[in-house]
Length: 283
Image (cartoon, rainbow, N blue to C red; front, side, top):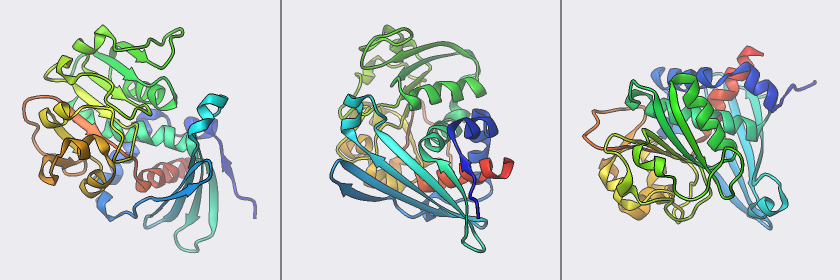
C-alpha cells in the first residue's frame, strides 16, 4: 500500500488560508468540544523535545509527531520539525502523511483568526506582527484573506527588507497585534495599546514563557482554545494569575466588555486533525 505524502505546497494549494479558517469554524459549529481532546505528551530528548499530539474524530484518527530543537536557529535550521499521520477511523489503517510543520503553519493562524474574527473592526486594519518566521507570515496572510489590511509592520530579531527590530511606533495605533515568537518575557509594554485592539499571542505553550504582560491579561477580554489547557500551559495567563472564570473558550463566545481582546493560543491536537481531514478530503 502506497501512502500519499502531502508536502507544504500541496497543503497550501488544497486548503488556502480562508478555507482553513472556515474548516475550524465549521468544526466548532458542528459541536467539536476542545476540552474533550487528549493533552499533548512532551518527551525530553537530548537535543530538545519530542511532542506527541493525538486526536480522534468520527471519521479519522491522527497524530502529530513534532520536535523542538532550540539550537537549530543558530544553524539556520527550523526550530520545529514535524510529521503528521492520518488513519482511517474505521479500519485504523494509515491513509496519509503530511508535512507536519506546514500543517501547523496553516492551522495555527486559522485557529487564531477564527477566534478573533467576530471582534475585528469593519475597516482597513493596521497590523503589527512580532515574529518574522512562518507563523508570523502565516498570520499576516490569513488576516489578509479574511479582512482588508491597511498597513502591516513585521518585527523580527534582525532588520532586513520588510522586517524591523524593536518596538515600532505603529504599535500605538494598531488594530491587530500578533505575537508569534519564542520570547520568554513580554515583548512590549501593553499600556501603549489602543483600548479596542485585538491581540493574538501564539508563540509559546509553556508556563514559564510569555509574550504579553500581566497588565494586558487583566485589562482584556481573554479568549482561549480550552480553559483547562490554558491554565496548564499558557504562561501569559498563568503568570498573570488569571482565574478560570476570566477565560472565555473560543467555542462558547460571550459578550465582550469594553477594552482589548486577547486570544491566547497554545495549539491543540484537534486543530491539526481538522485541517488534515480538510486537506485529505480535497485531494
